[in-house]
Amino acid sequence: MQTSMRVSAKAPVGVSRRSMVVCNVAEITRPAVTNGAKARTGVPPGTPVVSPQDLPSRPRRNRRSETFRSAIRECIVSPANFILPIFVHEESSNNVPIPSMPGIFRLAYGKNVIDYVAEARSYGVNQVVIFPKTPDHLKTPTAEEAFNKNGLSQRTIRLLKDNFPDLEVYTDVALDPYNSDGHDGIVSDAGVILNDETIEYLCRQAVSQAEAGADVVSPSDMMDGRVGALRRALDREGFTNVSIMSYTAKYASAYYGPFRDALASAPKAGQAHRKIPPNKKTYQMDPANFREAVREAKADEAEGADIMMVKPGMPYLDVVRLLRDTSPLPVAVYHVSGEYAMLKAAAERGWLNEKDAVLEAMTCFRRAGADLILTYYGIDAAKWLAAEK
Ligand code: PBG
Image (cartoon, helix red, strand yellow):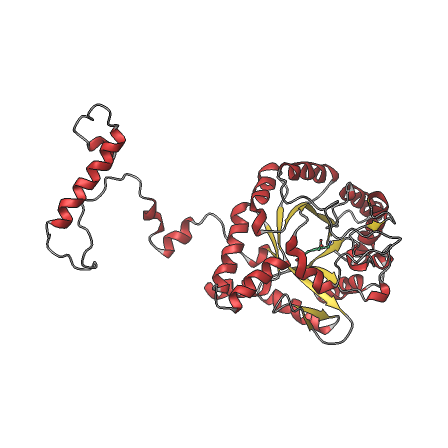
């Protein structure tokens, strides 16, 4: 029975039934407390004595025990959902710490990369995405190093597939790590990021990655039409089984800062005769836009994407949910470098419980509709999940 139905008195003229209910509750409570009713045990002195509310629905019943909570939990996070980004370099045989990403290193090509991936696999993380740090002398305005058959990225793919044939190896398809201008596409002298010319090189890059053994190529450049072009290029070369994970809704975000530190890949300063745009706003999406993600999703689906991604993660959960509800394709979310840096910085100061905050973030990605989560916390989160079992 509803509380309001117990109100027997007729509401006086001008008094709504609702305000009558409020009065009624106060009347029940007040005499009980001031009566000096016998002190009850098991509650602090001063706890009011009240008659139970007549509530047919008490959602708290379903939260009363961990057994019950876990029985009815709506989504589960597993290491199977994680894709671990790895930074690779070969400037020395040591791992190099990334100052703005404590705990994350540029791994030295070779044994160090293998050891890191072996550790991830031991906790059930069996998917990685490779980001190479290209030495400055190999960077050019047209980024040909991107499709060097023996480039660091291509060799790392081979190294990993040789050691772990069942590892799912994802790659990044974009020119920025190889481009002396620091953009994802080729920059004209007037400062325009060229779309169709860039796509020609992205196709060569993706094919070279597929030849090296990549399982999934991931265009992160936000050029128009690149998913369809990559699909045709891969198929033409016989790589019909290589998947495309498209960065469908990638926003021009401030949260990529630490990543650009890691690869020294931020847009470079312009020169008198060559304008270099200082940001990526003419190709990455405006953080203010939601509907535009639908347009990108429709295009990617029609062009043959296998997985759609939203990036960054936590500030863009509405977009994750949008893609989940708009398309039947699996949805990935990128918990980016700046999000990692924020959590680490607060955890280092003791301002957040790192494990709880990270696992909550992962759960929220799943709740928003993400199947796959790219996260630098991949190994730690998988360890924490294993310890909870
Ligand atoms: C490059 C690329 C970027 C990231 C992934 N691929 C940087 C950028 O777009 O500037 C960011 C990842 C991160 O911040 O963790 N196309």
